[in-house]
Length: 237
Image (cartoon, rainbow, N blue to C red; front, side):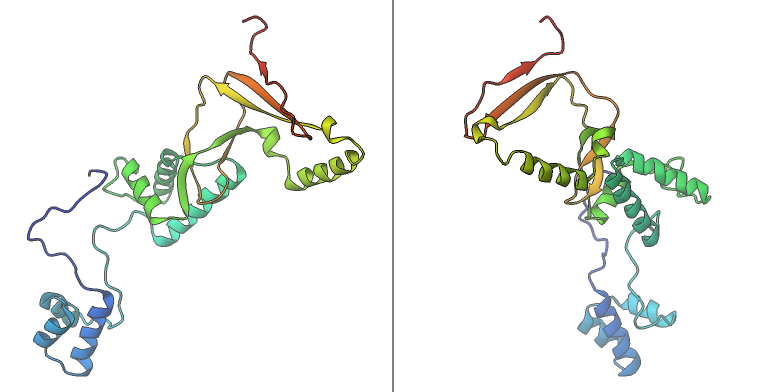
């Protein structure tokens, strides 16, 4: 199945009515003795559909069945999966789409459920993309790799640090207060797209880093910009 599937333009009849139209037609036929022909014309519901619902004595408020094949996971199972993905991303250990497919395979195998559309019960990437489209609260984007020690720093510790810093620098001249930051020029960032809650932070806790050349920039409190400082990996270039 192609990624952007388009229905072929042919004579195949597709559903063009809503649940409200179907329920209204059934209600008028049953309660107001409206003729089948008139209901078809008024509510634009196919005659065969109305006959099928009337013969099988469907309830008037029964939801209109979905087009297409049945989903591999139920709505409740997909909701639980969304909660798992957002929780793991919050902890700093997000899933890729491939991880999600592997997780779904292990779950289906554990409950002994066979999905004929999956090869060896393993969902494909197309299923993963469809899953993401059904759950707009998730997004698939690149994550910032951070070390475990940095991830363990709590917001309360950061707030306490700045409170103490404000007291320590209260009598220091602004020209003697220097703030600096660094940026890395890496040879291979190694970034991968993971699944996060839309709008949330995108971080992935790792225990390794890539080779990088660091450049430090510093500016004093009076606005004077200092010369950049370059740190190379080797002692000799």
